[in-house]
Length: 276
Image (tube, rainbow, N blue to C red):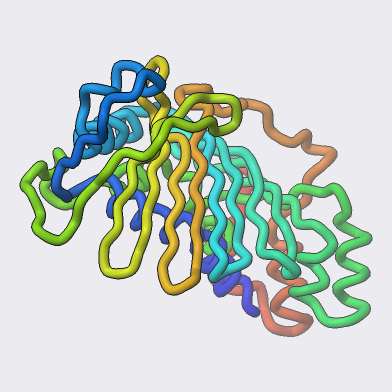
């Protein structure tokens, strides 16, 4: 796998998750469930109203923690990100490795694990790189094609924009084929939530909305053709940590490019790693 291919696949779960969220939180006939004391002030709202309100809470957030995974792809994302494009967290690709990620402004740091190096470089080369760069962040800027692709998942504004269907605010026009219904109150990571369920064309999507306080969307699950996907949203409006790796813990991103390209292949056209 080339570095650019890996960068592109790193955001697979995020892209899929946005589509699932938009599908769950827009369009559909409002179908209110019977009042249940456990629903709090959501008891008198329809499923569609709850879904729409949750979507608006999402698009108003200044920052949040995003976790995604799907059964169709080993990619997992766990990032705290904000509307300025800053983030901190990790992106993993199963057996192909895990990368810790820090982004502030146009500065990007990535720390690959041993599995990453071994998946990118054959035999002894991978072992040597894993040993040499153990616990080391590779640093560059978004001028670097690899880092730009990898850190694309840090863009909360893009996530919010993609979660809104065309014609926002979400349409409340009834649909003859899609109905949203309320499930029974339950608990997600210690918080009371109310599921909003959508079934259409063989797919089942469930949006879990916080009952108490602001009605944030906290979890989304989707199942279609025996494949499942999950998005977890939390830490709304908690600032992204301003801490960045110390200079002694970093190396220039050009080291990665040189290793991936191999000896004699030139420096490549997309490095632009300048430490500014």
